[in-house]
Every structure is written in structure tokens, then in C-alpha cells.
Length: 268
Image (cartoon, rainbow, N blue to C red; front, side, top):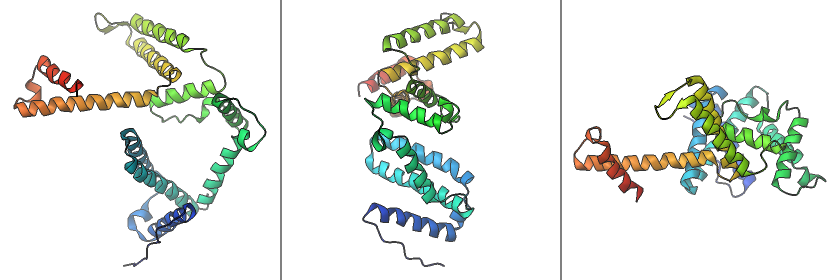
């Protein structure tokens, strides 16, 4: 069995990063699991780690944020290590590439371009991306993003080149317009679709317009919905606990009985 001496704990950023590189090199060459990994096998694990980081941020748990950031960073180094083995690129190429991009896209810091505010910065960013070869302003939005996140990114990028509403009143009027168009395709009184396919399309338009309004008033719709999800889970689990303590199975309770516990949970 190998008896490797782990690299010492670092006290500066450069040494700390080199320590991670050294550990990954050793694991890749000597650990059976690490040896077998490919970019494809790591992909779903990376997504999982990213969601764990997101959870830690939403929880406000900085100890967990630190831990999950380390896990994500390890994955990034791992991908570069795998690529270096086929001479495609190295971690040096990765770091130089992102530094070059940041420098190039911040001409107001590293050049002579003047900006008035963050909106100017975003507009310049999108213009530079187009000059770099992007065929569309929206081309940089990943196709596999969750729909709610994708809607936000699409709207932000459109805003970056000036394609946007003038004020939030206009946006809210659009929300009301889309709501009416949905109602026109869905009989909300009788709870049935007049044309299900059109109703689905109009419902999508309604959500998109709500996401747009959230952007205008400074609310992150993804965070807002996740907080509501967590709030619902917490209150529902309160009902489950109360039902268990009462000795009556939840499925045997009436809606009125559950509503009593739900209203209690809302006061907590």
C-alpha cells in the first residue's frame, strides 16, 4: 500500500492552490475511484455539488458555504487534470483564459472606456461578447438551465443591449395582459381549458412576464420561489408532526383539521 505524506497545510493562496493540485495528482494516479473518473462521470456529481453550495448559501450557513466551495473547486481542478492527460488543456490554460476574458471585458478598468453605472458595464460586456464571435446576445444562455433561471438570464441579456421596458408600470401592465390572455384560454370558473395547448402557452407567457417584473423591482424569482418552497415544506412538516402526536394518520384528517394546524404553523 502506498504511504504518501500529505502536503502541509498552506498559509497563502498560491501554496493552498498548489496543495490542491498536488493532492489531485496523487489521487488521480493512485486511487482506484479517481483513476476511473471522466468528465462525463463527474458531470452529475458537479451539478449535485453546485446545488449543495446553493442550499448552503440560502441557509446562510457560511461554514457549509466554505466546505461546498472547496468541493466545487476540487471538481474544476479535476476536469483540468483529466484534460491535461490528453494534452487538450491544463489548469494554467484555464486560469489564463478566465483572466484574459475578465481583463478584456472590463475596458473601464483595464482600458480607457468610461462608464456611468453598472448598466453601462453590462452593455459593454454584451457588445464585447458579440465582437468575440458570439452569434447572438442570447447565445451564452445554457440550453439546459432550469426554465425559471433561464427566463431571468434571457431578460438580463436583452436588457444589456437596451431591449427592455422603460418602467415597472409597463411591465405590470404586461403581467395583467398575459393573465387575461391565459383566462381567455382557460375557463377559471369551470376549471377547464378551452384549448389546453394555447392555455399552456399563455401560462408560460404569464410566468415569463412575472419573472420580468421581479427583475424590475429587484427580486430574484428563483430565490423567492425557493423560499416559498421551504416555507411550505416547514409548515407541512408541522402538520405531519401534529398529526403523528395526535395519533390520527394524516390521510384520515379532514382538510378543516389540517387547516387548523396549518394556521398554527403560519404563526411560528
